[in-house]
Image 1 (tube, rainbow, N blue to C red):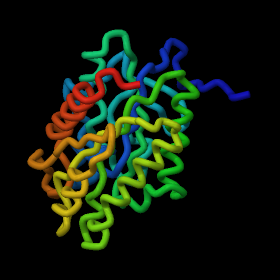
Image 2 (image 1 turned 60 degrees about the horizontal axis):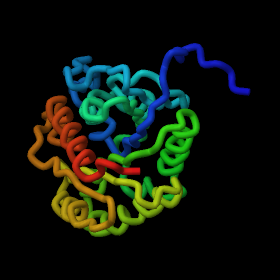
Image 3 (image 1 turned 180 degrees about the horizontal axis):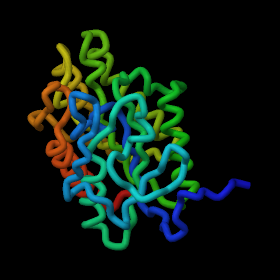
Image 4 (image 1 turned 90 degrees about the vertical axis):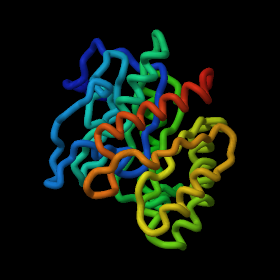
Length: 251
């Protein structure tokens, strides 16, 4: 029998709609993280906690969601604001009576091959996603995916990206037993020499219930790699609009 979790409040209501957040650092969130690798603690209005937004912790418990969402998941780097909270707030505002659950899984600096079936990151994401349903009775509504910067350094990796991403989508759907699971991926805003080839792959995927939002042109921090807090807020809204437009009645 599982011991009670002293940090979990008894009045927390389980989520009805679950969204998986996965990929690398721009999904995990580096908004507001300074060059000294500390988060500035600034939480925009659009990313504030809401009674109807929960997150699935690294310890596999539902808890009130707040920034930084990935603090206990992407533990080797400083996490800040990502797109998850602005996405969730936008969805909650349009989904009366629903409670949104976020399952953070993103880890910075990871290439698509590290998300292949059998790899630790992939298996952890699938296991966390399944457990999030087991502990809530909610339904997984979509996977939000922002990754690819680590595949833009060589022509070989960029060339293989579309095939690897399509395999990832197929495997996730099979392993979660959700053959029509909506996938909303983000086309890169930054990257190395072969960024455009990765972007072409992302924008070129033509599979059922897979859509792409384009982050190109969103403001980047001084490192020319990570989105600013303001850009992350905007990206969250773009993801929410894509979800609400393309999958209004998704099951």
